[in-house]
Structure formats: structure tokens, C-alpha cells
Length: 484
Image (cartoon, rainbow, N blue to C red):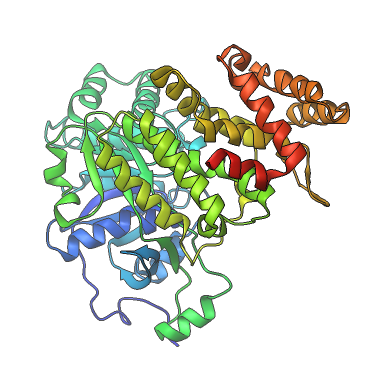
């Protein structure tokens, strides 16, 4: 079989280079590059991507061998049915390794057609490195490379007012656009660059804060040979993701005209503030994952898909979403309901085996960021406790006992947290007062909660009652009572 390239792919096309992309990994290729390919096919963008390898080791050599082409497999539930599609993505023009040829990277800044910057350099990528002096070749950090790139563009076009860039960072940190802008300006100052450049960065470039959402599992090692037989060509860059996708971009509305993904039906939204959408994702998608773990796992279930399909646990998960979390969000109800339905389809994805124990890593801090805000907001709004979220908290305390029947649960968390639970459960005498003592100590653990949860009216009593019931009657009977 021949390797995928422009010779093998007869529909290969070249487009003007409009995008500089820092990062060649699975996520951006299954997300942003796929969207650009879709827009090109529909005739609304007419642009390609120059990929810059952000680290010394990477994939640009493989990308160049395949003329920027790769196969993307999207799979999941759509309209209630399992669906899988294959597509050759033809949006990458070339890849550059700045560690081999830094000048080739900077030369891209001199292109008339370059308009966008997209990045995904991991959460640690948007950081300042004082070793990145102005004359370093290459610069190490992504913000330093971006600053050098922008400076070359500024100088080449004499500060042209129409030569600014629209920047979409996709790193999974809060306010990523603002943080990247802050780092660039820090380098401008650190390198003593002229005020005119600083003004140009501020006035002629747009740093957008974004929220991205698509599960991408990447290269399918176990199935690759079989897939290649089906495709009738070799492809070392096969990428696999789910059907669902969402890109929320905070920035001026005029950007949508230049990046018209929504116009062709892609789930891309340009908004004034990403915060409500971030809250929705964290509280529903991540929050449901976290809330279901102890209940479903102690119930005897091992995966998210099995939890959704179980009559009792599935009812619990739906109740948490519709009866409790949804009521705490500041977005239109029909919009939130639609998002919940999409999340449930993602949880049921038959192509992904998502183990509950992989979500259980560092569960205490996850509960604090993903679930506790919903619990506290519900109390504030309605003057009562959300029963199912409180039950989840109670189940976590049982989960950290470290036993599921005769099985030992492989707990993974901060050593201090694990020691606290170990000491509390070691001294437990089986009594109601013993449960009360455990609950009081856990709720008082402000190192994680950032507050003493014993101060939340009725929470200590409710958690104690649920935990005592789980201990005496088991998780199945206790859950039935909660769902009545």
C-alpha cells in the first residue's frame, strides 16, 4: 500500500496560507484543522494552516511526508444512533520545525495572507521564560515565539494597521486569551522593544479567550492496521475523535465574518463572555462525571456508558443534571437542556470505554471545582440542599474508605487527603456518632474546600444520614431511597 499523500488523495487542493498554528497534536488536527477543512469545502474560508512544532520532538516531519494530509475518524451517537465517519483532512499546507529552521518560521510573518494564530501548547505552554532573550534562536516558550513572530510582522509591514492577527489560544486554562496577551506584553517589556510595537500589539491584534470541547483519543494503535486495509493506504497520522464539538470564542462580532464556521453549521459561537459557557461545561460535563463516580462505582459499575444504561444509576445521573445542576446556571433553559442531551449522548458513545476510575483521580479537588459550586448555588437560590449532589458527596466519603465489597479501591489523590481518610476510617467504630465524626472532619477540610462546609445549613446532618445509610444498608438501598 502507498502512504497517504497528494499523489494518493486525488481531491488534494492548495489554499492560501491564512493560519499559523502552534501545535500539531491530535486535538488541533481533530478540531480546528477539521473545521477549516469543512469551511474550505463549503467555500467560505479559502485558507490553509502552517503548523509550527512547539517542542523539539514532534510530528511535522510526518505531516510533511504526507503533504499535510491525514485521516480523521469521527464516531459517537448522532440523532440517537451510533455513527462513524472517515475523512481526509486537507487544510494543512506544511509544517515547520523552528528548532531546525527558525528563520523559516519567522519568514511566515512576512506573508500578506496570514491572519489567524491558533495554539494548543498544553496548559503549561502559556508561560514566561526569562531565558528567552530577544536574540535567542529559537525562543523556547510559545509566548516568546509568538512575540518574535509578531515583531517580525510589525517591522516587515512598517506597523501596518491592517496586518494585525486574530489569535485563538486553545490551551485549557481560564481566560487563555488574556493570559497569552499578558505574556506577549511581558516579553515586549523584557526585550525593551519600542512603544510603537507595544501599541500595535494592543490596538491591531485581537487575543480571544476561548473554550474548546471535543474528546479526541488520537492515533488508534490497536486498530490502525485494520483501518489502513479499509482505507487502502498507509497513514501514520490517523486521528480519532467524537462527533460532538464546541468552540466558544470571546471577541468582537466582526471576527465571525472572517471565520464563518457557524455559517456552515459548525458548533462555533462568538460571544461577549465565555464565562457562562465555561460554567456550563465544568458543571454539567465535568460535574456529572465527578458526581457519578462514587455512586456508580460503589454500585458495581465500571464505565460511564454502563452507568448511563443502568436503570437506577442512570436515573440518578439524569436527576442530578435536570433537577439540580441545570437550575444553577445562568443560561436559557432550552439551551442548557440541549447541552445536557448532547452530554448524555457523549456518555453513551459505544466507541469509547471511559472507566470511572480514570475520572476518580484527585476526586476531592475535582468535587470542589466541578460540583461544589452547583451545590452551594442551589442552596443559595432555593434555601434547601440538592439531595442528589449531597448523596454524591456522602458516597465519596464511603469511596475513600477504599473498599468495594471484597475489592480494594485503587485510590489516587494528594497523600495528605488519603492519610486523613485512612485515619478517620481506621478509628470508625460502626456507630452513628462515628459517622458524624468522619463527616465533620471531612467537611472541615478547608485545604480542599476553601471553606468549612460544616457552616452550610443542614449539610453535616444530611451527609451523616446518607453515609450512615450507605454503611448500614449498602449503596443500592440507599440510592433507591434518594430517588423516591
